[in-house]
Image (tube, rainbow over all chains, first blue to last red; front, side, top):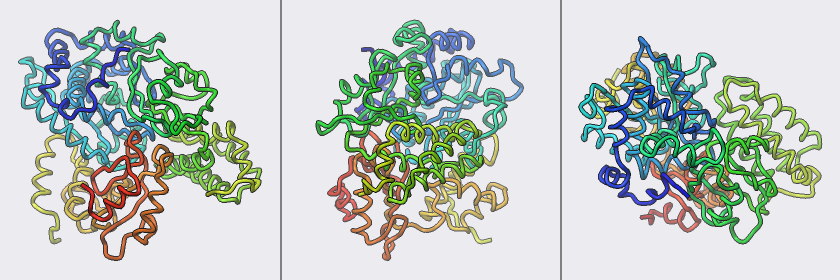
Length: 422
Length: 158
């Protein structure tokens, strides 16, 4: 199994520039990009690599970069989305902690490719330690001439500024992130116009996830074809960093070639299987926004399309495992409470609907539910999904629908008084 | 208006000014820096941020109230923020919350009478692989257990 990241995780020493240059071909890809390659060539390589965005939506990165206008009177921006907030996701945190220079080098290459001279990394506010580590790495890169004016004695200049969020899940949505960067409330924007034309500070902008950007140096060093072939399914190249948590023996970040194993193999062979010798009841396979899978649905191939085919999503690669004793009603109540709390409040279906769903789930859990509540939950969820400006509405609706459909008897035993909340 | 923010705040801001094409982009960094001075955001501090940025005070209030990390009222010396989202919940986070409530004799969202502790429930901190986790002020504590929480509450934690 080829891995690009995990062999460097776990040791604090690895974050230093000396390690990066000695062990990871540090800044060689950026040097070659700036001195020997045209921006279009880089975008072409990233397209050929078939990397799809690692933040959750899985949009082809090369295509995203290609949407930015080549000629622009306004400045163009590259913004790295390090607002890692999807429940269950903690892979970007490891990239920042152990390989911050990989991210910075990716920022340099990406900025050169799209024609950006000031890039921003928007990091979630809670990651104070990680922000410090990343800022130290940025300072180190400036000191060594990888950032600043005339990089590698070329005419290319680049500044990178680290910008801290302040606690809001919605800022992981790219247009909300851009508003937040501009000093506003993190409310998603109406699209179109898309950020490629009107993004940060009303200028053309590419917003990419940490893992996505940190992969770019690997693509240039090892070749786009090599990277593409790591993936087993066409149009989805490379490796995937999977955050595995919940009721497993060994929670952690695991890296696998995309599509090379099943979800069950990830849980059992990599994360040690279900804890305490219990059986798996359910798996939330792509962050809390992903519809839940039952234990007999997890023999699915680990990649974007196979997940979509069975009605869920790979999202940010966050796998949360629930053992046989998990209370599914309590779990979906907690998930829904999260979305109710994080809804930005702009769209009525999401702002009101998430709270209604949370209230209904709360009363079912506390013994005051009625049979009609389950249909009402489905009805509300169906009136949120697809009816909001951003994907938070879908993220709140999908799990509720899947939990009620797949674990209906658990809800019914609460409603019929056969089960009481402990 | 008498100034309440320190020279350190203004020094920090003048370094950042050149890094953004618009002045309003300084609002989040300014609120972070202001909160560092008080542990929360008193009205006077937010009003001074408004003057510094050059916007109406309501605009600062509007932004500050959107983000959970900005404290609009005072918090205890140690602000415990226990994540109870999926992965932490699955690994016993609510037991930790209940334990803290009992031990500190407050409910979630409250501050102890002596002003030492505030207890909050937190959304996902991105520490799911080391769940359950919590923040105490700006620091992460992971792989928590009741014993570990006791150490932190009693000031015995390394």
